[in-house]
Image (cartoon, rainbow over the protein chains, first blue to last red):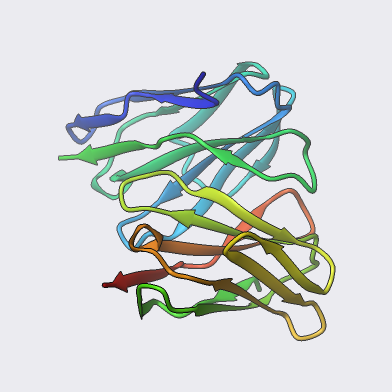
Length: 113
Length: 109
């Protein structure tokens, strides 16, 4: 009965590779998010989708491309991985676009070598 | 710009009370959240304040003063399991949550 799930939990890869992280929520929420948490534990929004439409796109390199096939899924594809992409990536969801609590997935720990 | 400030680290003793402060300067305000994050885990929701005053939920309470751009999280009867990072986050004009850098709380026996 997992609410927000992400795969994989750990991802170790070489610089220059392309990788994807998947996220699914079974809460019936309309809005989903991707956050990046760096080594200093600072959590920062990257993208937000509401009903499969992109609503927030922070200043993220265009090597990062989110895709939402339906409102229960929000995947993150990263091209040409760089050392600085190493971080924990959290997916989250909320019932509505505004005024609602966000529920976080367990995180994907990405290490780029 | 958007700015949220919290102390980096705090320590306290089991059974005690601790107050974690958060001050913010954001373009617009649509609510303030507190999240708890244990090491290696996801943030989990603790509290939400949108009106001035105190919200109490068991051992945890959160206070908001919008005119002062200030909130605090109060933890009573501290337990060892309360050792975690506590993240203050403000929802500004949009759906975006702006997080502070978090306060790492260590509870000692």
